Image 1 (spheres, rainbow, N blue to C red):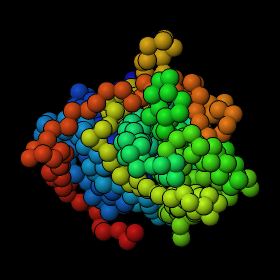
Image 2: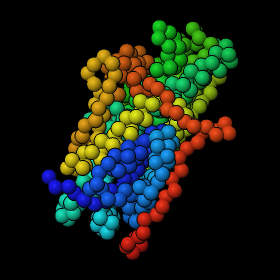
Image 3: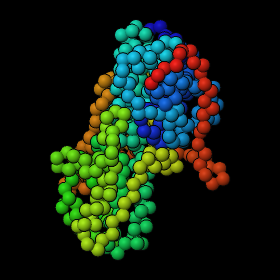
Image 4: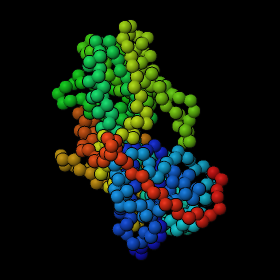
Length: 418
């Protein structure tokens, strides 16, 4: 097969993670090894940057900066939640690609982002523009189908489990059998993140917090929840509850939502923690209910990121480039767990259409019969993903993160009205 010669473009989309920049470092590091890739561009703010022809020259960044991306949270290229809807938007994307001779396109994101990459690739084929498109998995929600797990997940559950242990120290001192603490975490359609808090339990200490994990996979029952809380308070000084924001009732309705929807039409979530605290306040006299909502903090916690997670994010970015150079397109990188007792992981690719818009639920058989705790199967799955610590340099007592120079690539087209 003859080499496809041209320029590379990589972009980021959706919510950032503690390790998404490690995937960008993987793309750049691997791309430098291939002469068929002439220029290495980064698109600012996902597809918005493409529409606006806002590219930066990643090859001009120092190797020190590229290495520093591996411990830097957020999306260094900028991100967006913009959905390409109009045909003229898709046509503009191809116009920009042709103007800049983009032959390799990599998009790091979740299921909606991979759907966008799939549509762009199909349009390029229809217009006869030879290009290779590979998706790079990214989501703290861990709900992408086909892959064993997603880069970003190991770090978020490492952070949340650490927070649970810290809260336990506080509550053990403050509680007198009258304290309920509710920690609300992300997770729109699946309980992977909330379930990860179970790792905070020490081995052979079944009564360690979290005492209750409220999951979207288990229809919520008000009375059962209050009875579970009462049961814990009879035994402990406090009850620590972790709840996923996507908690639903028996009819499949979210127990709490915020106003409005996002660009992809998803209902804005938030308030599940306050909902549970309200139940406690009304249903258990004399008990104080407190709520902590981590919000976006949980996806930016690079100082306790998992080294395993960061290394696999880098590996996924590099694998995307290798796949494209080898002739693959319309694919998304996935992670495959090894069969041996000792944890290992390798990459493969699947069709973008298989990833796009799908949702992988937390297996019900990994949840104990009580519906509020996780069994050994989940622990065996999740424990390897939080191993190791990334090295974050500190200066004057604070972490130092990468800052791209962002040398702009000249625009070649007329401005576009988004």
